[in-house]
Length: 318
Ligand SMILES: Nc1ncnc2c1ncn2[C@@H]1O[C@H](COP(=O)(O)OP(=O)(O)OP(=O)(O)O)[C@@H](O)[C@H]1O
Ligand SMILES: [Mg+2]
Image 1 (cartoon, helix red, strand yellow):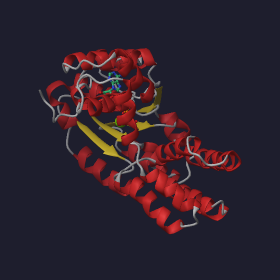
Image 2 (cartoon, helix red, strand yellow):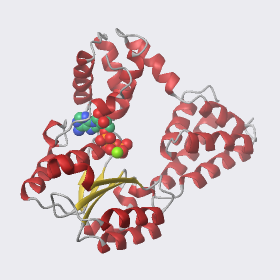
Image 3 (cartoon, helix red, strand yellow):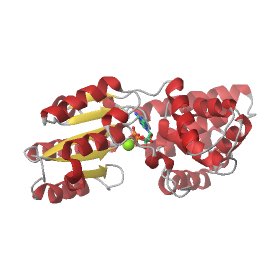
Image 4 (cartoon, protein in one colour):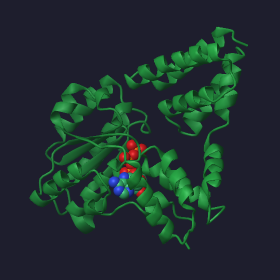
């Protein structure tokens, strides 16, 4: 048994037709492959629903054995800004495509780029459109500037329905020789919220300790996966210890690489389930809602999380 391999990679579909769901998108991508013509594209949708998978599958089908030479994957939030993206694109675009008439550049988390950086990206896309096709990936298309939206074919990926996640988990469990209870599989499904990556990751982690796990094992594992720093961070903030609280927040955001909206979701779920008195709880939930809105609207995650902790620290509730 291959315990070292991450199952999300092991079970990532290799071809478009192997992908579960997203049929409205897959059939159109298949036409691009068949016609040997690919436009710039924008893949929008929640995490773990096949955006990266679709880009990879498309590239593999398009270029066959040469796919690696013709595919560049960049992450907008890793690459410390648009300048790095620009240089990498330029380097990659300099050499001729192999076995096709252009290369494919997949830019993950394009919505992490500022509006100015997106303008620069648009110019880069235009400059290299003879030799490159861009596939931009994002969670929220509304965070992508209009000039890019209008130059790309936009595909909206949907979160999975529970039934699809359940069947997928069942298949993987069978393949890996696991014997989970049916309730265990349903618990995994429910916790994953339509995100295939999170479902598969949780399956791998719960089954690493118990190959015939049940519902309680799943909940147990899931609660460990939740960063305990969230609890500490919120309590420090409510105690008025802003700087200490902020240190934990930076750890989550920078070291653990959690996204701002995920951290907010965790904060939200912690507060909802905490023993804080109802009046204060309601006030806190209200505040979190405001900050979530701002982040979704495109405000900088770090600044918004900072501001949230500052606000909690100034409430003087403890
Ligand atoms: N449509 C799908 N069919 C089968 N498996 C899928 C599908 N979508 C996702 N998966 C599984 O989930 C994993 C994560 O998917 P993927 O990397 O494509 O997500 P994503 O949409 O790019 O998410 P993110 O926005 O977080 O980058 C894949 O490796 C694969 O195992
Ligand atoms: Mg991805």
